Image (tube, rainbow, N blue to C red; front, side, top):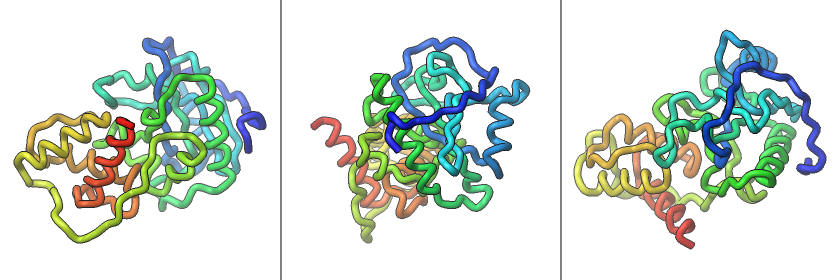
Amino acid sequence: MSAKALQIEDCASPNCEERRLPADLLLLHYTGMESGAAALERLCDPAAKVSAHYLVEEDGRIFRLVPEEKRAWHAGVANWRGESDINSCSIGIEIVNPGHDFGYPDFPPAQIAAVEALCLDILARHDIPPQRVLGHSDVAPERKADPGEKFPWPLMAAAGIGHWTQPQEIVEGPVLAPGNRGDTVAELQYQLADYGYGIEVLGIYDAKTEAVVRAFQRHFRPARVDGVADVSTVATLRMLRESLRG
């Protein structure tokens, strides 16, 4: 499916308001509910107080819930590069998938093709750099796991959507793990914060650091998601940062 072939059905949600910032971030979610119909109903329910700009069903159907010029309510408590009002600066896409609580199946090809086409269409109209195409877990690592390690970020990147580098091979070697302290932990935290994650440089591998490392792995090193900063995780992070310096 190409961006030109997009067919979008309007299903207006009342859960929106005026933006406070220009849209310069694209945020991808999974719905985390047992059906797309249930998710669509909730996203349009004024009592639920949640919404997104788009929802993509498993068969590739796309629903527009909130106009892009409006602020949808999809990110919640979140942070990226010091900005905490992620709802105001982002466009949110909900991808129908029951998520980790309900078996977390693969994303169907028709759905991924539709997500790709929708993202390309959005990126053609907004000034959103690749490193600001993110998952919900990136901006809310302590609360969220979506769209998760099964989402095909490398396929998206090959189509021109998002920032990516080939993950470094998982090998035996030193690791940083919960409970560790010192300069090497501080350096890891600095590199994660420099990339954009909302983390303080404390030199203590605390629960927040573990959550951020796990979110990083879900997006950029999905072969093993354990919250432990092994050689592969640290090297992949370094390569991502170096690629931005060009």
